[in-house]
Length: 120
Image (tube, rainbow, N blue to C red; front, side, top):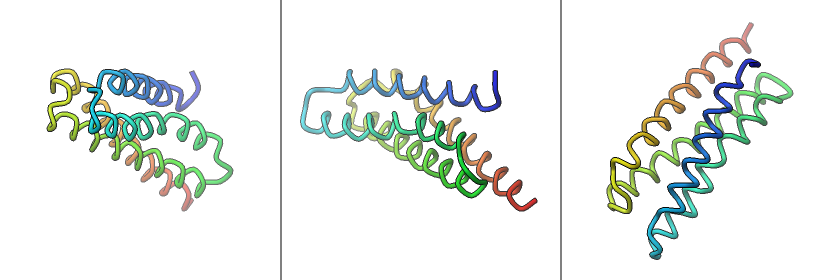
């Protein structure tokens, strides 16, 4: 497996899980709003990470990783909103929220590492 493949796979799995959650959200005005936002932000990190892996420079790589992190952060907020609004049981979203938090930490660390490497 190439370097970064494991993270890419986790991001793809995260996207699929977000899609499934979105399909399960209530058919209400607010459910539809959260669905649109979460499906966009939750499926964005994986392809953006793929773009980062093909970056043309260290700065481009960091910029694209920051987009991944931004979308993960947004997804985390939408998941919390869905939990607090009781759109789905918290137990159903807990593991996905935890995975989102882990991916945020990984991306933050990757950004810091890449910034440090870019100075060399």
